[in-house]
Image (cartoon, rainbow, N blue to C red; front, side, top):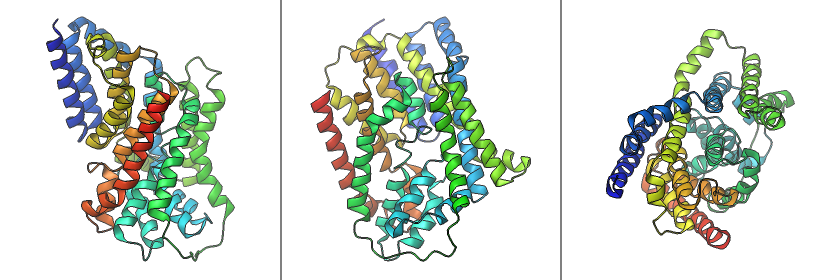
Length: 396
């Protein structure tokens, strides 16, 4: 099989992932993976890799866990538990502008930026509309950047890294995001907040507990089970049970929430990510890519940021870059430092992507323009990527 033929298949598969994923992420991943397989594997080999991926217990449990997480978010939204959490935070005006978007951002749900936008609008009187839109987007993605049940959950598994150990390597970049947002978006805000209700510790702790139960259970018991996804699904199930008990919603309403959240999409994304990775590993593209001369920093920062911006996703850049990295530097060669740089760069491109739903929703809600929004966001984003590139050059 010629290298040209292999390259054609790889480029077509990437194009399918990028362009189809704009509308449907899991479909793009599946089409890209199967296309790559058709160009590089026998039909029998493609079927074997596909079946082994779809029945892998760890991938199945991960997909089920990821499908449960948006139900938790939907329950907390429907029962106003997150609103109770926000109302009982006593952190001042600047804190209220930052924390509600950050807390709501930990719950993946369609149109989630609309949950925190009213709080930002009400609190940010006197702040320019493009700044409020920037605050809503930037800080909505602050905590989810390091939240164990966010994008880090499937992507660290793809990389073969320990999820919670990797968070330690991600933390410095988390500080970069926080400092950039504080300096460029929050610094000029002044004033105080008049709370309408008295502080209620119970209404603060219950929703906070729901958010924290799953990662605590997962971390505490992941070494007890041979398959680490077993404590994960136990944790998210417990989180859901507590949310349901606190919400007092009826069974019919739960099914409606699951349907509204389109939970099957989240599960199918996981299968699509690992199908692409496994087909890539089984194909001839690995040896072909390994012959290309490019630096680690360019791959992780430059291409990562570009793919994040181009796709409006985090999973897509990681799904593409990790197999390339494996091919270039060895199947088990990715280090926690390299992953942290790649994840951060992809994340920064994703945050300001014009096809990122949170960006479009925030621009519409705050009655500003994409041009003004980009003017506000480009400086902290570019500076963040420069920091990532410098770190990459020094340590990689």
